[in-house]
Length: 395
Image 1 (cartoon, rainbow, N blue to C red):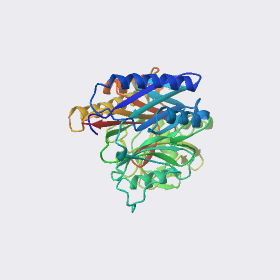
Image 2 (image 1 turned 180 degrees about the vertical axis):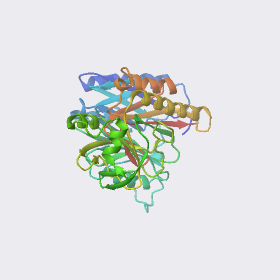
Image 3 (image 1 turned 30 degrees about the vertical axis):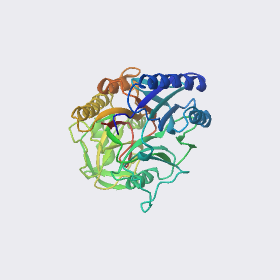
Image 4 (image 1 turned 90 degrees about the vertical axis):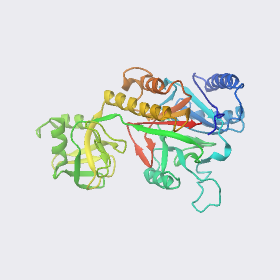
């Protein structure tokens, strides 16, 4: 992207969405006015709109107002239990976060159920390089859909998240949708740096799955799965049933294929690790039921949510991005998207707004928009308890 590319952002909380939108418009206008002296002055073309679920019932009216207020801007977004901007989080209150950019129209394409993806044999001159994806968690085979979409891009890299609204899960791409996928395909001209930050810490060693079927885990390293998790938790086989149920409800598993990156650094998961819930246990046979398909040969480590590990890993990825920007090879940061798990946010990081303030401290007061999701998307995978930080870059 050229050095004249403009990103602007705004955020507001108000019981009336129209008042919040009016406040966001004032913020946009002030930023655009401040940049009038800059060369270029290209019009805004792509916008992001993230709504807290208080506004979800009015999504169609909000999208119509955005299109009327900023004609010529293509809008994408989603609803979540929380939304975020640079250094700010809004949880459990009516709020919206907007961001818009002056990208050349030839460098991106929206897609949705009403705007299908171009086929591989399409005569279109547009070549998808990466994609921002919003989705709804109850969509059948959402993981398979992500994998298929990934194959339609040159890099295979997707980033995004699942709507997490409590009342009406939805996503937007010049229309309001439930189910399926929508988002933006970006061409190779759109530079970006993206990282996944994990929020859990292993409580035991990485083990090899030696017997499993579908989502049932029978053996790890040739031992009953239940024996392994009890050992890692420091519990005996005689633990009371109610205690076992309570402990397992707070225990998660980190899954990776083969030696991909499970515990690539002792005590820390790598970015390819998928964290999933333990759904149940058959204590008599030592079997665990997991919230994902598990296969023989996969690597697995039991884990728990850990605020200290989450803070350290977020600082690590934000510092990696800053270092890449400072190297001069990727250009300068123009704007950012941050999609974090709905189970994270400031309270998990020690104080309100703490998670987003860590991002701002590392990257500066960059235009940023995002939401707290019911699942996070990076590459062709659906994650949990993670954050996906993506920075748009230009010369």
